[in-house]
Image (cartoon, rainbow, N blue to C red; front, side, top):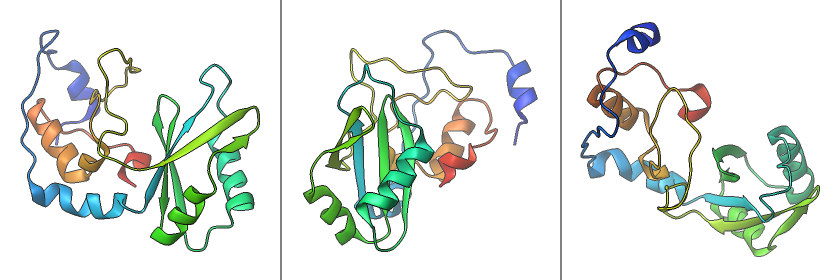
Length: 163
């Protein structure tokens, strides 16, 4: 495994260079099962400031009263992933419709394979690991390692991304 420092010092590829990576059913199946328990939230007003993640966690605990565990992850561009331990709890929360949180409205939908993918006219913020538009069902350590190896060497995965 290459260190972050070594990766930064290495010669960068050409602008527009791409890596072709085939991912098989084995890498995706387990993640698809897990994502079937998930809801995706997006903010109705992208011009209003998004509430802090800790505030959203506190608000959901207090207002949704979820049985079992629920994790919340920020996917970027105003999109949140709500991962429910119990799928019937996700359905119960979804049935309640959109919710007002602070000065914004949280719109919920079931997770689907296109969530978080880049669209033709979308933009993405740059990060030190540039995997833009990777569908959520490909998010696993095995896939991240294959992507890293295809780009010259796997460095690391952010702790929040791992879970």
